[in-house]
Image (cartoon, rainbow, N blue to C red; front, side, top):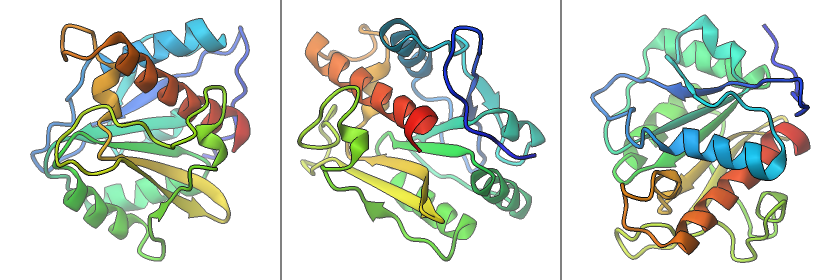
Length: 209
């Protein structure tokens, strides 16, 4: 099945997938983050995304129904060979994966994504990339939402035949900023910054790739 570009209209409902992976990592972290991001995009950008994300496993044929999938967590990630092949085919067919390191995910997801695309390397996106420019402007690039190791936030991407297929937010914890206010003691300004960056990502995936 080939995934085509989906333009947002009032009579088009798009569903977002949340990746349920094996290995012991908490794929279910940040349960309120995607619903809040979806609500923000629907209200601020006029999108028509289904209010609740759909849990999907990387080896499932259902993966191809979701043009945007999100993966997060703090720990280990393990893909089976079948999941590797399915995820690779999904991304090559036009799908998009957003990986958000919730602190501790990095060594595991890099290992597994290298199995998915051994011929590709994560490339750090420059602050001049259009994903940081619209609809909300981030002249310094990916915002820092939560502090862990006093490292700067970095946005990495994988490109297949010139098309971005994966966006990896590292040392930002952007998904935490999407969560309900009572979950994390973040200011409204920090939460807004996280949601706006998430909206830029949604906008880029569906209208500018």
